[in-house]
Image 1: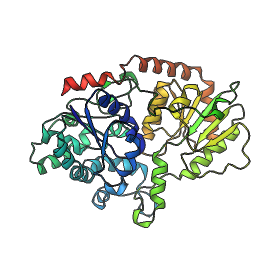
Image 2: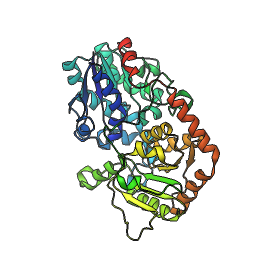
Image 3: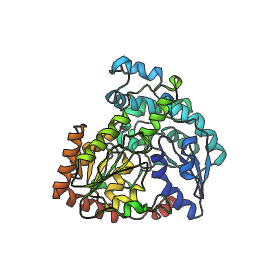
Image 4: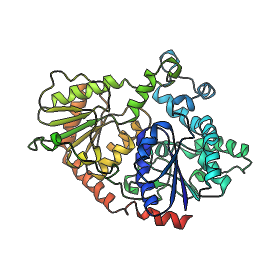
Length: 404
């Protein structure tokens, strides 16, 4: 069986697909990942082929002037706010972005001749490509799959179908004719518009050979342990913005340095805890920090979460799933995109708190509220039990073989 993965966005998108790609390759199937230059490193240590037909992922690839004309930006100086982005997203991913991805991915698919496409949630072009090739396709876990309403993208996809000589579809769920893959049980689903289908257990072993650094293993255990992290997408967008005017982002993004500074300031106030802050390489002022605060560029997050009492997180879907898998209560400080709805869903499910006050005092209060609420801990343990009741990711191989 030949399986084509499409991967774009931040490294977290690739990390969500990696266990599945690894399982298929270990079962003897031929796996090809079509991705961007920045995401090659996610897959390079595994026995999968990687090709780079896509340009570097930037908002300009899908938030084009034509799309911007459809939704009047409400931010200062004509910038697109996060609220605008939610209205723009369906038009963009099923319009210019799907068209561009089709140009990039279709030649790869025609040459590789896959039996199955496992697509990034933001890649709707592969819905049409799969129809052209007469093969099944399924989206892999991503915030985009959770957020996009199929009814909103149907007109754009039907336009792409017509361009490809395919019949238009009336059913919005034609974007998932064979279902979707998730690593979350139905009772804890974050998908707003898609029905549950193929669910498997979130793994804690995405990075093979990862271990905790010795200094973390030596941290005191007589007080709560808090992990604070901002994920991988925000640093990526920050680097894009720093590249120059030619890559100016059309979206008003959060000030990552300020957000990280607020998280560190909140950590200093949590004197009753030990706090590890992962910066993902974002500059941070660490002068004069109290001994209970430890700042580092990166940590093996899935491993550390197994011993964390509260996770102060940006609310990316990878981090959410890793928290569910390890029964880690969350304080979610959302920054953009699906993170806002994820924060609401975390609170709705009783798994933590949505941090609505992003000042250091507000963040501190939210973390303390999570620590003090035994119901959140109990609900988080229930989520972990539900996760452990799912089949392991290796069982997806047999399911996909039967589908093909």
